[in-house]
Length: 444
Image (tube, rainbow, N blue to C red):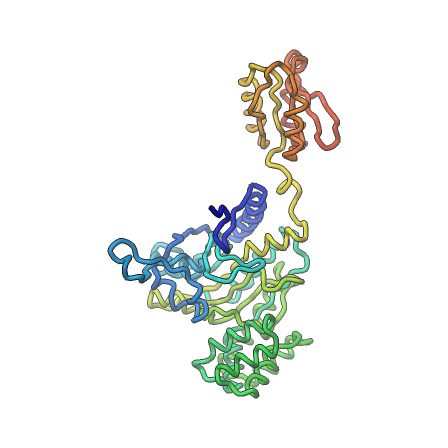
C-alpha cells in the first residue's frame, strides 16, 4: 500500500511543526498587538456559500463534497471544503452582525483547500493567516493592516520584502478607457494578473482569445505595466485628470495610503504596481501583495471588498484585509536559513539521565522541577540494568542524536551532595550545580 500522503497534501514531522508553530506564533502575536481578535470557522461550508465569490477560475478550484446517504447516487455536491477564510468571514459577519462591534477586527489562521495543480510553494491544503477589518471605509484601515503585515515580516527577519499596491477602480477605469467591454473586466484582469508568469506574448494571446483587438492589449500593457513612476505624486495627478470618477477616487485612495503609511512600518516597503490585479472577483478598492526577490508569486495579498458581505446580508458593509501565505513564508525562510536554531534543532532544553536502576521516581520529580521552571525537559525513559551502567553509551548518545544541548545527571555523589552534574553536549564541559539552582543556571 502507498504510505505517502495524497498529492498536494503533506505530513509534518516534528521539526516541520516547530517551524510552523514559530511562524504562526509571531503572526498571531503581531495581529493581537493591533487589537485583532481570533476567529475560527468550519472546514466545510455549504457549496452555495462559496460558489460565485471567486470568479470562474476560482470556482473551478473548489473541493466539492458529494451528497451522502440517499443523495449519494446523484453524484451531486452540496458541501465544499473551505477555499479561503474571507468568504466564511463575510458569512459570519452577516450571521452575527448584531453581536459584533461596529468596527470588527479579526484574525484567522486556519487551513484551506484548493483543487490546484501542486508545484513548488503551492499545495492543495495550506494555511492562510488572515487579518481583516470590517465596518470602515477609511484608508486608515489599509494603513494599519499593511503596517501589521510589515511588522510580521520584520519580526521574522525579512529585510528585502516589498508591499506593492494598486486599486481595482483604477484598473477598471483604465479598462474602460482602453475599450474593454464591461462584461470582460473580470476575465481581462485575471489575464493581466498573470503577466509576470505568462509574459507579454502570453497576455496578448489570451486577450486575443477573448476577442480583444491587439491595440487593446497594447494599450493595457502600456497602462498597466512597466516600472513604477519616478515621481508618484506627479503621476497620480496626471492620471487623475484623464480618468472617470471612479478612477479619480482610486487615485485619491492610493494617495492617502502612501501618505498614511509613512507613519508606519509599512512606509519604507511600499510601492505602486500598475499591473497588480489580484484574480479574485470580490475586490472593489485598494489591493496589495507582499513580495520578496527570487520568488515566483507572493508571500501574501489582499484588498478591499466592500460588496462581499452584502451578498449574504443584503446591506453594504465595508471591509478590507490581507492574507499571509504560511507555506511560502516557510519555504523562503527554510531556503534562507532564517529560523532560530532553538526552533529547528531540538525538542528539549535538557535531558534528565536515569543513573540509578530503581529510582525512576527521583528523576520524574526532578524533571517536574525543571518543567515548573519553564524548561523543556526530556526524561530518558529506560533505567539502566545496574546503577550507572552504560549511561554514557546509551543515554548521552541519544541526547546527542536528538540535538539536546544539556544533559543533567543525579548520580551517587550528586545525590549525597544535593547537586546536579550538567554536561554541555556541544562543548563537552561539565558543571556541578546545586539542585535548587539548576533552573536558573540553565536559563542563563
